Each structure stands twice: as structure tokens, then as C-alpha cells.
Amino acid sequence: MTAAKRRGIFVSAALLCGMIAGACSAPLRAEKAPVTFGDLLSAKVAAFEETIGSGARVGVSVVDLASGKATVSVRENDLFIPASNQKLLSSAFALHALGGGYKFTTELYITRAGDIVVYGDFDPTLGDPDLAADGGKSIYAEMDRWAVAVAKHLGDKPPGRLFVSGGSMVYRPDTWKTSQNHMHYQAPVGKLNFHRNCFAATFKISGARAQAVIVPQSRFIAVKSSVQVGEKHIWSMRPGAGDGELVLRGTIKTASPYPLYVAANDPPMLFARTLAERLVAGGVPFEGKIKSMDLSKIDRKGAKPVCTTTTPIARAMKRANTDSLNLAAECFLLRAGDGTWPGSAEIMTKTLTKAFDLSADSLVVSDGSGLARKNRVSPAAMTKLLAGIAGRKDVSVLTDTLARAGIDGTLRKRMTGPPCRGRIIGKTGYILKVSCLSGYVLDKTGKPALAFSIMANDMPGRVAPAKALQDEICTMLVEQVDKK
Image 1 (cartoon, rainbow, N blue to C red):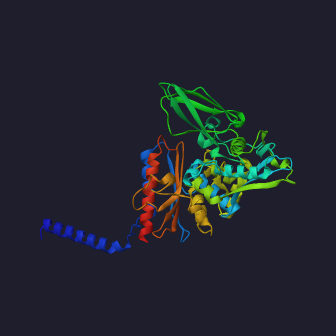
Image 2: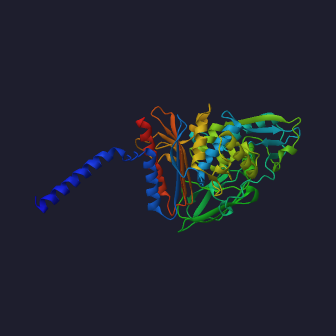
Image 3: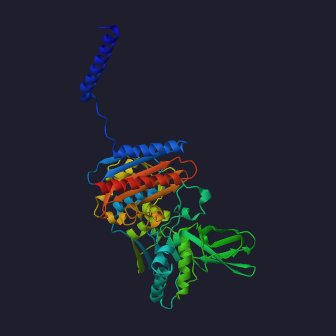
């Protein structure tokens, strides 16, 4: 045998042995783990963060309500600024502390001396323009009912003074930016509230004249307007102390049917000045003094209850969660708490951690609405709370008030088609560099199947990409539910 043939036989034998060895060792090699749904979602979040850059952070937690187990966990225990997702925490606090059947109660009494006294209970809905429009009523409807009752009680006798719940109460938390106190979304909060505690202004134009139309209207509020028709549409409106005066300045180009809302300064006094107007309009000759004070100093002995207004908590909760009304969420916090922001925040923290078995370091409460940037919560704490709420008998009081994807509220323009339309119910949240979405994924029967929380913080520039990510994740979650 030649040397070449011997080398060929040796190489062939070596290859054959290698193939046999490979075949024999194959079963011993560890198989690669299958890619899970959680892996796919985590990869999507990682790709998003890499694309966005600039230190953007995203946290995701998803809990299967049937098993109670987490199915997705991305930075689930990190603390995030929740923005208006804070309203879910405030709603849960109010639901637990007050109950789903709770009703805000506002009462009007007349004392022996003929003074009118109005006791407030933090109802955020009185005179709410959206609720009035939905019901086909005037914002003054309830006050006009009161005026009739007062006129009937007094007869020809004129009333004395008008006292309302207020006094030394602080109407905004110190964690809000004072430079934005005139903005409608930062309206003050009191035991008595009216018309979202805002003034609304539109203009009628006649030649070179611009006539301001103010709501609420009251002869007890002086309107001083120097606004004129001009080439620029730049004007402002500012209320004076006690909301007894409004000053308008600037120029307008055209009349507009859409009102500009500006926050009032003193909710009880805005309420009182509006009520005084409705009393006079209803035939009650009121000319007395109006005062906001601590009504515990008023002796109720001999005082007659003349009329009462009650508002179910579910009605107020819908304004907080479907439409993200900050005033409503702050009223939940203060009414379920001790009436102050620091005290109520402490009570809310203790209540939620105990009631929903949350760790004490998983949330930081600063306000009820989420305007304050000091609020913090982890995605895992949010889903644990949502899962706990889902087990309550009065769960519908909260779930029925959440915005529905593609249908209403702050989600009406998002996820408008299948499979998410009507299948995602939740609370959006936005402040500078923050975008969050938390809520429930419904199964095909409309029952909550998953609790989820998707929080994006430290977003550079626009938050639209974060919203797109949230919508993509929600689509994946609905599809996952439908596979079961």
C-alpha cells in the first residue's frame, strides 16, 4: 500500500470517528430554552430604550389575575414617577377608606339668626361643566334648587350672612409649582368646589369692542376688562384675592365659542359668590356678608337643614379616571385622609401598604392627582394593587370609571382598532419626561384577565414613542389572553 493510500484511509477513519462521536454526544448537549412571552416583551423594551437613548427607563409588570402570578417583569421593583397613574392609587385609597357606596354630602343650614351656612365634604363635581352638559342641565341647577328651598324656608324674611366651609385651609400642596397656579389643571381644592374651581371666559365682538362673557356669573364678582380687538390674539385673565374680582387685559383677533379656563384662588369663596347670585336670581333678597371660615365654630343648635346634595363616589371617580380631572383625585385624597396633604399622604401610604400588602418602600405619596414630581411607585406595586382591587365586591366602582381604548376618555384616540379597542381599560399619565399607562386587559367576555403597568421615565423630548410602546405591549397582551 502506498503512503498516499494509507493517508487517505487514516483521514476517512478520523472523519467517521468524528461523526460517530458527534452523534453519540448530541443527546448530552443542553437544549436551548424556548423563548417565552416575557422574553419577547423584555426584548422589545430593551430595543426601545436603546433606540431612545438618553437614559430613558421603562418598567413593566403584568399579573395574571386568575393565578395571581407575574407573567412579565421588567424593572418591576424600581420606583417611577407615575404622573396621573397616581389617580389609581388615590381611587383605591378612597374605595378602601370610604367604600364603593360612599356619597359626598353638601348641606345648607339656616341658623336661628337667619344666617345661611353651607358645609362642604370635598365634592369635586358641583357645577362641573362636562357633567352638566352630559345631563342636559345648567351648571347652576343644584344651586337653583337650593335657592327655591331657601326662599320657601325664609318667606319674606331676608337672610343674614352667608358662611361657607373654608377658613385657614391650604388649597394646594406645596409640591406644586406656584408659577402654574393659574392653569386649569392646577386649580385649588377645598371642602366646597364649583365649576372645577375655574373661571371660563369667551368674548363677543361688536365693532371694535370686545365684551367678556364670564362663567360662573355673579354680581358679587367684579369683572374689569380692558381687552380690545386687535391684530394679535394675546390676552390674560387673573382673579384677585378671594375671587371677588377678575382682571382681563390684552387683545383678541376674533370671537371664540371655546372658553379659556383660568384657576380661581379661593374655592369656598368662588362657591359662595356664585351661590349668592343664584339666591338673588331665585328671589331671595340676599345683601349680606360672605365669609369663608372654619364652620366648627358655628353653633348648629336650632339651625334648620334646608337642602342637601349628595354625589356618589363613582360619579366623581369617573371624572378622575376617565377624564383625568386632577381636582377629583385630590378630593379623594383629602376626604379619605385628614384634610391636609401631608397628613393625608401619610394615611394613604399606610392604608395602601396594609390593605394591598405592598412594601413600604414601593411607593411615595405627595399628592392625589400625580402633578407632583415627588410621587413614586413601582410597576409591581401598581399591579399588585390592581389585582387586589379586582378581588373586591365593589371593583366595578373603579373599573367602570377607567378610560376604554378607542372609545372614551384619555384613551379614546388610542388603540382604536382590533384587537385592543374596548379590551384595554386603564389610566394614562403624562407630565414632562413621563408617560405611563396602567390598568386591565379584558378577556372576550369583558372580564379583567390581566393587570398591567407600563411606566416610562426620563424620556427625552416628546413622549409619543413611549405611548406607541405602551400600545404595542397592550396589543401583545390582548393577543396573549386570546391564546388561552
